[in-house]
Length: 443
Image (cartoon, rainbow, N blue to C red; front, side, top):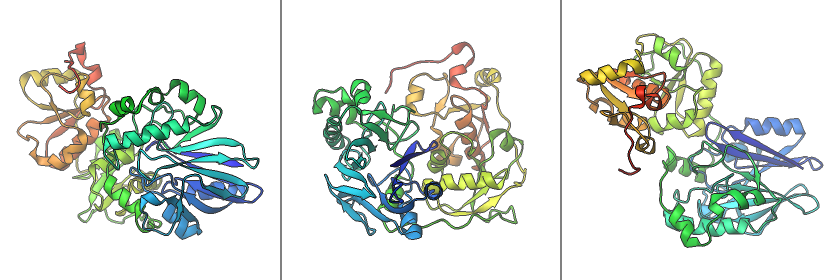
């Protein structure tokens, strides 16, 4: 038996290739849109891809089941509660699916979504080897219950599902659908696997004695919803989405009315970039999620990159969050404008004189933990919507924790015509003299 895990670190998503070497066949569970990784691994192992299994209709990333079906003839299976519009096999609780002599038992585990299922992997001898939990049980946490139904209703279902999973043998390996970095749960570990026994001892979500206690703890929506969520769900539920068109290098640097997304590193972008460009470095953490928070689902995009490889990696990230309208890329962007950053040592004096407006672009929970007096709070992901409505009478300085989101925010404001300058090195936690006010969460 072959059981291979693939992790998209940027999205915190995990998918799996499971196969039978003797029979020479394999299936993919929860495939990413970038199916090339499964095709290459199957070829290396001498396996033929024959089917795709979805634990649920994903809300944070575009599935690759359509590409596997259209280009490789794979069948697709998902629970009937998903109301999928594509041709599929409807999964039922307790059913067993064969991949050669390897069996996957379907465990209907609603909560994250009504159709959610986990897959218990049985080897050739019928022994329970691993549990593919999808978005139910994570390492050190449980999935969020508020993306498809009301948070309390989802939490009630999730509590029952988690209890069912803990009835499995302690030695069963747990292979989750997400690790740290995903918006489909909070507080999860970066570890990529665990066991039922370990989670029963240490996972806080499994320590509640009653459904009421669990619902009180998990039944309130608190996290950000994944960007493009409604569009992603619609695409994953609807007709198959095929392979994206080839990404072409453009002969002209004229964007032709498209939005320019500059994916080079911050320092390179600062030394010179095209007028109106928004900078989200592909090398930075959560590139695809950050880009999706800023860009409209059907917005036409031109990539400015340092190389073809960088442009292709950026395109793959954008495709993963259903940003599909890519007009092409440029590797020698014009240097019409530059970024003048502000040092932390200079910011206090600018604030004292009233020479600048400082915008804290972190999320609310971060600001609740401490903020610089006299600063305004607008999360970076909302600044493009606000655009030129931000006060332009004074230069705007953007600040976050480390400089990464501040740089993105400054590029967004500059593209809207605002004189914006980021604090690129450091942020609120390293404010000189620790002159940071703290307040209770929610105040």
